[in-house]
Picture 1 (cartoon, rainbow, N blue to C red):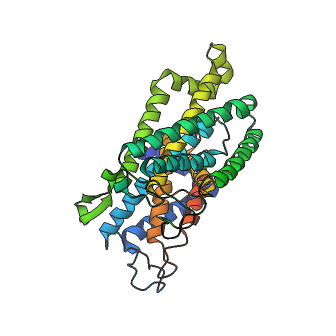
Picture 2: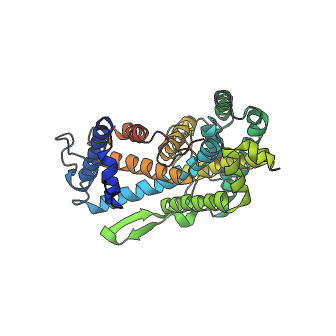
Picture 3: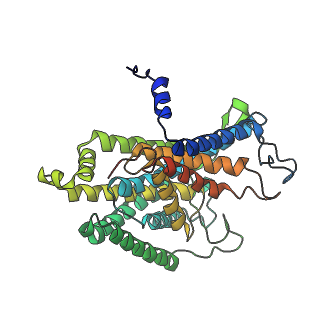
Length: 386
């Protein structure tokens, strides 16, 4: 009689022993690729002394050669992940948890960003080139709150008028929300600025930005390796963490959150218990839309807002939810972190294309990451069945 496998490593060994060869080979190749990527960043990458001279030439040296650049890139990755999570958490709540195919998610971002921009412009009168010194805390918080409220009401109206009656019909919902997205994008072009006066363009093209409050306009000293980093980006990370904690408490420690999760798993049984599941779903949709507006305000403060970004942020949110898994808050966190790490490190450590340009492979590796996750975890890292 064969003894039971030992706990821990023995169980893993037993599982690997029974893994079919057709699965073991791709898994081994993927593990080797990930290990090589880690070794490349830590020890192999070569400082950019002669662009294009060899395959090791990058913007930064390895973590061993240039630990300061490594820490700076790591901070860029996790702070960008904070922004990704804020935007994608709304999508995860609506699409991943409620199973509503909201293809208008990117248009919510676009509209929320422009609303916050217009309100801050009217409050500060600073023109297109808003400087942090021109903005106080209230002049940032009020546009944020108004944008969240407007987009929450807009999302609630769409859910009640267009989506409530076809719950569970994924294709129909997708087509309806695509139509909403096109309409919103056209209205943004018609009613919000397309051309910024010459000489006042803060970001170039037709993009405009929101100013952070003045107190964020300083650098934080990391005494490790002498790195200085933007306080505004650290605030962005803190907001992402606060959103994650608040969502977890709401979904897992309140009656409304428990009803949402129960309604997703078995809507008929939840309704039979006398719970108005439609009201609960309407609340969840409004919260998800408000989170998109929060992410839009934060993202526009850090970068810019311009026509066409609706598609970018819809795609970003889709990638995060697909990697992390539908219906999982922890999956949204994991997907945002992996997305941020791949984006930041591939931009800094992959071979450069020219002396005045960073790597061209960063967007490609994002989809390589998604393909690897789906190849071995079709439901995502922490996904569960609908």
